Length: 261
Image 1 (cartoon, rainbow, N blue to C red):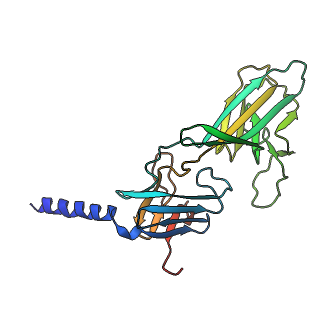
Image 2: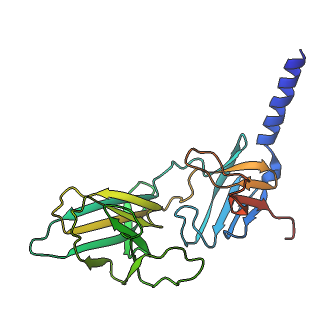
Image 3: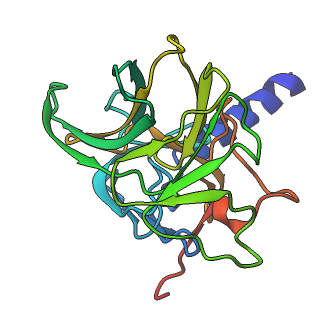
């Protein structure tokens, strides 16, 4: 009987927590420039003034929608199906008579309507990328950027640079057969290895696609409720949230603003 009473109390506590009205209010993360307001009518407004939570680069985002609480998790726009935000493709071709090697790097922003149709595109230069043939080692790395990196204590290792505003570069073909190429940039959200199928290819094209969905860019975004004043915001690849430990800081949290602050 005591066990039944304990279970009932625990169940009611969880239910009361999941329906807590105290989440309503404004939560902020000053270092990331993020502010989320949860209204009592189950609507929200999300503003990121600096770093996009979708693409993890310098890009503003402002969006409104609906929110729900499910267990210990807040879900923004639960009615919108998840979409792929970043895609890429790698193409190779052999141009007869060309003794040099050329590489084209395209950052293509694609805008989709609610039916999944592309309504417009915008092709840009990738802001900064590193590439290496065959092996990703420091001596092989080359950086391509429109601006030269400032060498300072906090810059870390800076590889040899190609400074250009063009999307296509021309380089000398290495003596070794090219079997693959490593390319890393913020638009790609990391480094990927692309296999070269034809060793005789002398022109490569990388297209990185950033996908924008006009019916809502925030889709099933989740926050873990630590308590009514703190939300964890960053999920790992396995779906778990980053929490307080030696290696994380306040950037993984949203904190509730006090009235008048």
